[in-house]
Structures are given as C-alpha cells and as structure tokens.
Length: 175
Image (cartoon, rainbow, N blue to C red; front, side, top):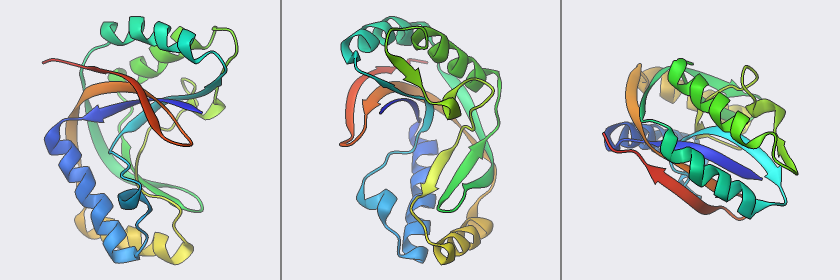
C-alpha cells in the first residue's frame, strides 16, 4: 500500500502529538507513540506494481500544489478501534484529493482505495489506533476534556510505502 499524506507546521504538529500522547498515557495503548506515527492526513491510498512510474508522476505534481490551511473541528471514530481528529473539508483539502486522484488513477496498474476517492474520502488525523472498547471510551474522555477547535498549515506532502513504513518522496512548501 502507498500513501500520499500532508504534514503540518510545528505548532499544529505539537498540538496533535500532545493529544496522541495524552490518549496513549490514559489508555495504556502506545501504538501511535511506539510506532512514531507523525501527525498527518492521508490524501490518497493505493496499490501499484509500478512504483517508479508513480514516483515520477508525483514528482511532477507535488510542486504544482500549494500550502493550505486545515481546521480540525471535531473528534470522530472508525469503529471499532480508531479515534481521530476530523478536519473541516474545505476547498483546499478537496482540491488535493481531486488533484492526486486525477494524477494517478488513470495510470497502469494503480488501484486507488475506494475510501480515498474524491467525495468518498473521510479526511482524518489519527490520534489512537487498535484501541479496545474500553480504550476507545477512555480516549473519548481524554479528548472531551482537552480538545478544542484549532487550525494549522500543511507544510509538506509526501509519498510513503507501508509494511514496513518507508518515506519515498516529499515536497516542502514555502510560505
């Protein structure tokens, strides 16, 4: 599996990491901390056997994309075991989704996950993963006491490969 994700400015990154650490501390589930999962929003997830062709395509596309603002407004779940911060789907996030989808979906042997296609995608920033029912309840309690709406800037976009996780390319946006 390959992932195209955006990453955030220092202030937003630190705030999200704080939520991740609080949830890990109160639930005892350290998956996100131990695996050093950086705060991010995955824009696209796909399979391919033509990694080099996709890398070349995204190296052309990434510089055409712009830095943008993300506003996290609520807490959500993917039942039964994931809790996340939900951003407002604004023109910026939707535009990234469409641009990445259009740039790779027609390529030979690229299969974009149906959960990461425009208008089928639920953008999210995972705070806890592989949580039990009790851990989910504890995570909600933590976020209920500490979460409030905030915003940040997307400062980098990248392509990574999973299992094992490996960054392949990235592009930093300048203000």
